[in-house]
Length: 405
Image (cartoon, rainbow, N blue to C red; front, side, top):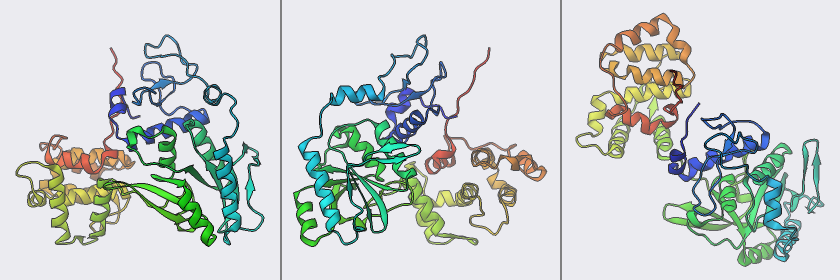
């Protein structure tokens, strides 16, 4: 029940936008509703405006035309394909790359003999797809799709879903990729970049030469480092092949808040968060907050480490930083300390947001909250509130409010 306005969609970072874009696309492919217009209730998706490349909400086909936000029925996927390719045949470059991939896979001793198939349909009860190349490589069924031009995200998602259902690992591959700023990147390339856990794979003459020289199938992997694009030539066996999702060469760095939470957990046992790691981590938190007169010592004095361990306990559904046996004991013990009473409203939100709201019906928990909430409560503008929002953004999503006359 999250509300995402058009302004918020435009302001979303690229990772968040692509999460929304892919979720909306999958719903569109599966003919289900995930995002709907707040005005008319009809399903919407999140394309980019071609000229500005800014994302916007658009109604799916068949929306009520009297909705003030309706902008016309979108073209169907088939109609867009027809206008893009206009019956064009396979390009010579596409054919060359496809045949070269098959040649390299056949030469690689890790490929199961006789398993390399070029340009033939895979047919299942749920449909059919014709991968450019398929094979059994290192005992894994794989499919290679060559992507040289733009294509639509519904087609990308549909192919990925098909191969995943079929138990086949998909690799998108382009030719001679030249890194550019993400704002200038072909949208289709950015879509497959996110499919591959923020990696992009390409062939070029050097990769082909190295592959042919030692008889191993290789690709060039691109990813974004701290200072821009980086790349390296890798064997297919060097890739990480997850059970679900597409393979990748280099895992992206997690968002800061996730990395901080992981490091805090590493420094925390049932006896609490160890010194001096606790001090260093609280100093890092304070520096991220960038508020005058707030440092790690001030956070420690406010008992923020206890709050953080309590929040993590509910997120992870287990006691963090204590020997408490269950979450009821965690919250009762936490609220027993009078200097933590100002955190009660915040923790009530955490309890509900993590799916543990039934605890609030317990008499012991109700009593603790009733006493604590008599004291002034920290809000989103306070030091504690700002840090909680920074570390646990997923727990504080906006929810729509229905206004009644």
